[in-house]
Length: 274
Image (cartoon, rainbow, N blue to C red; front, side, top):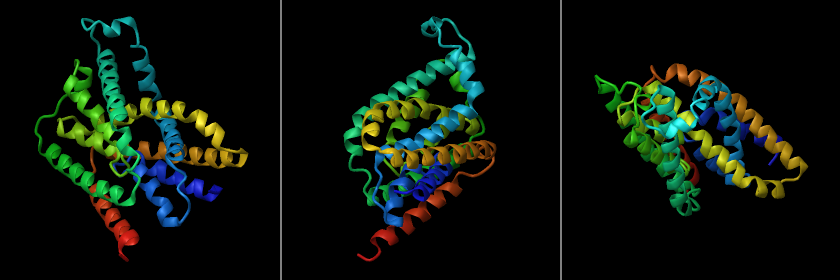
């Protein structure tokens, strides 16, 4: 893989990570389209590191405020406060995500097959469309539920949804938004929680893979990798900025249509001759 390939990977990751279209699905399908060897899940994870940094920078004020709630009183449920309730729900959702990912990890080994990714793009695109329709028909929404008390069901289901996104084509932001919207949350809160929830998983994955990464990359490889991370960070920050402005206005069905079209194009591109 060369610098230009890394730039392309970084741009695709940065643009698609925060849109409900599956960045991992795009990255896994890309080698089949441009005819290069698949750089693998570890390289994809490093592209997610770039977009994870973008989340840290964009939501730095919120993260700083929530960090102040990391005190012993966090486990004393008699002590309230919006930030404390948010952090408690966040921790529980992360716990459910990690536990579910550990259980699902053996199945994810085979999930980079193109036909599985194509199926995931189509099926979870349909679920996103359904969630958007159901949420738009609601006349009453949950008012900041993750800041109003301990929401075991909401936090747990969103955490479980995020775990399913280890399968390329599902979309982490897409499936967490789908779950949050079906549960009755407002779009902007659902989007912010979805983005923040990705951070522990991304950075834990990076720490786990650092030893193998250090062994597998030479100097030129690190330059290529760093280029992809930088591009994914820059494009990712811009994508968050504009998507957060649009999420309350735009119909998510447009992203479902994109997913279905991409699935069709990839199917006929890869399997049309059979």
